[in-house]
Amino acid sequence: MAEQEGIRESNLDSPIRPAEKREEQSGPASTAPIEPHWRPFDEVQHDLEHLEGRDVQLWSIALLVALAMAGGMCGLLLPKVIWHRSELHTDSPYFSQLFFGFVALIVLFNAYVWQQRRLLGKLRTELTRQLMRANAAESVAQIDPLTETLNRRLMAAMLQREIRRTNRLRGTLTVMMIDVDDFKSVNTLFGHIMGDRVLQDVARLLKKTFRASDTLFRYGGDEFLVIMADTASSQAQIVVDRLHQNVDRWNQKVGIPGWKLALSCGCYSYKSGMTMEELIESADQRMYADKDEHRTVTAASSTRLAAASV
Image (cartoon, rainbow, N blue to C red):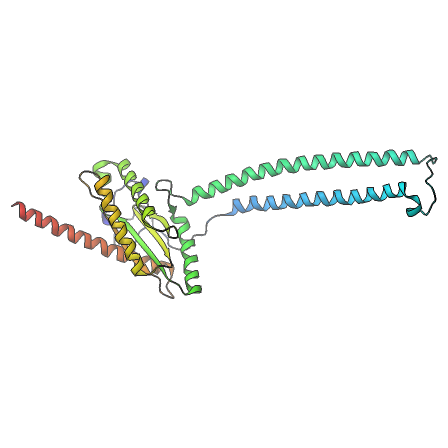
């Protein structure tokens, strides 16, 4: 994007587009599917499942020992049934040893169970903490810290999934590219902090405008991408009109003296057989066509004002 050159890295991570010849800013951006790195989260979940298996194993051992002890008790208390004897002889020199050994076995087994339960409890607590940290790390990796929208790392995987879903259900899918017009002027005239605030306000406007079922991403720099499932081009245009109305209200209520917020939008509906890259590129081209139209209107307006002032 021509007016984006020179913007600092904090609010510029814009992809390089083959349709335009411009200086490379941060290396070529890939639109190949990027699979999110879920491994740490999955590893912790696997460890928790393994721990639950050990818990079940411990209880199984306890049940078997309890059954063995119950059999021994029945042998002592019901000799006629077990040993086919009319009475239990307790005068044997081994009886006391057997009895105290039986008691010692119970004590030792209870100590073993207590120790194992204590160990499993510690492991479960530690794994739960790791799970929470892994979950938090994944959330941070998916969210753009400035605009609090999903970032491009997750976009490719989600868009591929929506394309497969659209093909399977023979539904509709529209992708919208959105770009802030003349964003370089904000950084140049008012500083990068103001530029960051503008991006945050734009993100809030987009969240307010789109449905909860639409998925918003920061595509790079001052560009955003929206996946609109079950949406045709005509429906997407209604959303564009509503977005421009919200932008006009922002300029009236908030605004920046000497600069006017304007957004260029490009919508393209998925056609069977299109790749993800083709869908994004088609929406991008329409966004640039909209931007060129804005420039033409602005130039014509400036010419009329200049002529009127002469």
